[in-house]
Image (cartoon, rainbow, N blue to C red; front, top):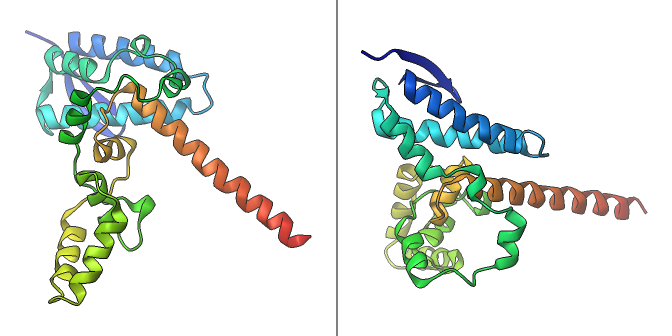
Length: 213
C-alpha cells in the first residue's frame, strides 16, 4: 500500500504517490536552485512547473494518481538542469549541428496555434506559417485572393480562428514552432522574450525623448 499526497503544481491539483512526490520534489528543487538567483528565474521556474502540470494532466487526467512512472517520464522529457549548456553558448553554436533528421522531427512535432504576437487580425496566418513552414505573408495573400474567388477563405479563416487555440504560454509557443519543450528551450524562450520587450521599451523611450526635443 502506498501513501498518496495531494500537491498543487501551478494551480493544478494532483494526487501523487509518496515515492513519486520525493523524486519530483528533488528535481524541482534542483531547478529552483539553478534559477532562483537569475533575473528571470521566477518566470522560468513558473513556466517549467506549468509544463509539468500540463504533462501530468495529459498522462493521468484530472482524477488519476501520478506514479513514479509519470514523474520519470516528465523528467526524461524535460531534462535535468545540469544536462544543458548555458543559453548563450547554444546561440554561439548556431545551427551547425542541426541535422536533417532533427529538422524533420521538429517539423513533425509542430502543433497548430494562433500566433497572437505576430498577428494582423487573430494570428491564424502566422500560426499556419509556423505549422507548414511557410511565410505567413503568403498565407495572408492567399486568404485575400479567395475573397475575389468565391469568398470561401473568409469562412475558413473564421473556422480556424474558432478551433485553433491561442499560444499563450511559453510551452505552447515552443510547440507551435516545433521546438522540444524542455528546460533549456523554456529558459531560452523567456530570456529572448524579455530582451524583445526590453528593446521595444527602450525604442519607445528614445522616441519620446526625441519628440520632446
